[in-house]
Amino acid sequence: NAGVTQTPKFQVLKTGQSMTLQCAQDMNHEYMSWYRQDPGMGLRLIHYSVGAGITDQGEVPNGYNVSRSTTEDFPLRLLSAAPSQTSVYFCASSYRTGNNAYTFGSGTRLTVV
Amino acid sequence: SQKIEQNSEALNIQEGKTATLTCNYTNYSPAYLQWYRQDPGRGPVFLLLIRENEKEKRKERLKVTFDTTLKQSLFHITASQPADSATYLCALARSLKAAGNKLTFGGGTRVLVKP
Picture 1: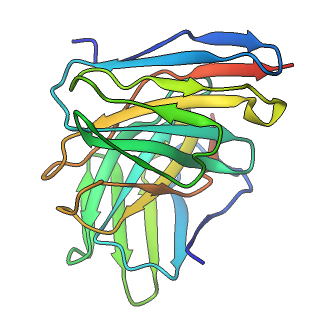
Picture 2: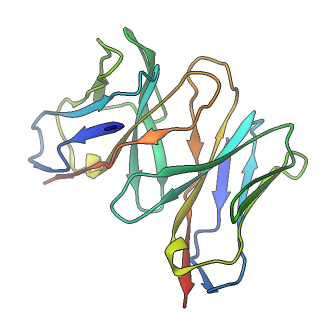
């Protein structure tokens, strides 16, 4: 019963580099989302998806891309990393209706230098 | 603009007492509200969900109230234990069925239960 798996757990990037944060869930959840968590700012929604092939922007989408080719996977791409993207990133999933409790991954701590 | 406010100051409480946390919101008409627990270095974990037409929800030592007139939810931990020490987040969503199931989170309140 893995739940939501995020990789890597830690990453250091240089400014301008690109990378992909991986997120996979095995609960057959339709809804998946990416949040970033910064001190004093709480969790802010970056992108979300209501099902395979469907994605949309959240509150802070600039500098990030997503795709959803399967129900299980929802990778987050940083196109050209900036120090302002230093944060802890969480992936979450839930059923689309009914019990809407989110299941979160354990997070990726990203530092951009 | 929409705002969800939780007390940013840590709540220090003696073991055995009841901890009460507040979540206030403005410019928002949520269909339901959720509470999560987050331990350092971990992702949030779901605790309770309360719908707009419910006044109160309980789960073991936890109790949540939801007052849509005051635009406020209270989260109570009764008979608190040191193991309850964590940050507690409230989150609101507009609809149970609308596409997106987007949750907007408050900044969280840290609780420290002293033995």
